[in-house]
Image (cartoon, rainbow, N blue to C red):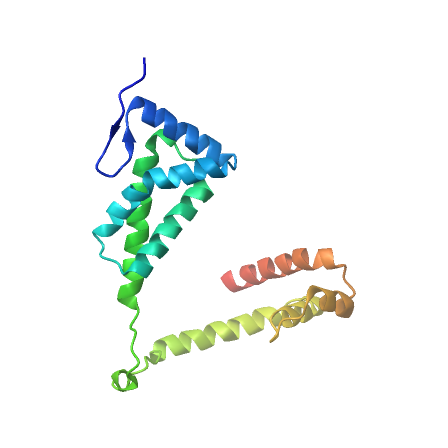
Length: 196
């Protein structure tokens, strides 16, 4: 006998059969079944829109949030409890909405340059500058205590633009595969020197 199927206000099927159907869609979508993926999106799109509605986003921002939510689902589909997919989508949508909302609060969009005339550019406090200069001096001293070849490697890696591994290999006579490990040993030694 077939189970009872009800559709909630958000359009998501709510029954044992609906849960097993969703679980089946999730499993198939995780295996790359495009049709299953499209059915999942169709089935849960109203739920995602319902969560976004309370944030009153522009059409563009709502589309960006929705796209990010579906991308997150695609990234994590093999780890999601398929029976709790609706709850996962609600939480993920709400978090993405809050992230976008926070970004909007930090962004000031204006074409009127006069708005920025009264805004002073924050200069670092004297203490910050002194500490920064001391830290730079400590780094220079630590680098100078390294073997010459390591110093040369660091100069090449931190140049503007940085040297390619092929160029470093030719200049220092190192196999390309040993540049990364040497860089790691060099940075480890610098950390020890700077911590002491």
